[in-house]
Image 1 (cartoon, rainbow, N blue to C red):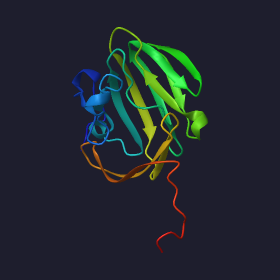
Image 2: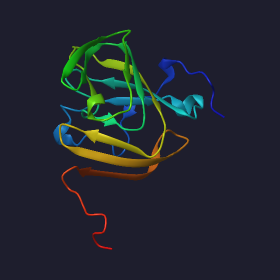
Image 3: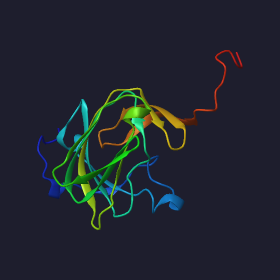
Length: 171
């Protein structure tokens, strides 16, 4: 059984898991290290991690969740959060709410400072999940089977909104 308490100093930061690590050609734009918390403390219905973004990078592409809600608490550093057309400053102590919705709830955290930006991320763990990526006109559909070590397996498909198939095609 996992302990219910962990100190942030005891967390192990690693590059993002397979499937979420940015390709080498986007490394300067997207980069982050993540420390799993939920699996360490035995959480069941919420996901927790601490994410660290180096200066000049974003952790993930601009996206919205149609199912899950996220909350971020800035622990160290500074940057900005992008919401739709707005870019708002972030600093230590800020709390950010990212409710589920459509492209109007899209968000992205970017480190615009000179030191690592570190935040606690909390999210609901409702499956299946659908995400939209307004900048690239993509979407993803996933259903994760969560492993005890914080990794996940399961179905994940990323596609473009313009690539539509008729419901009866191929039947």
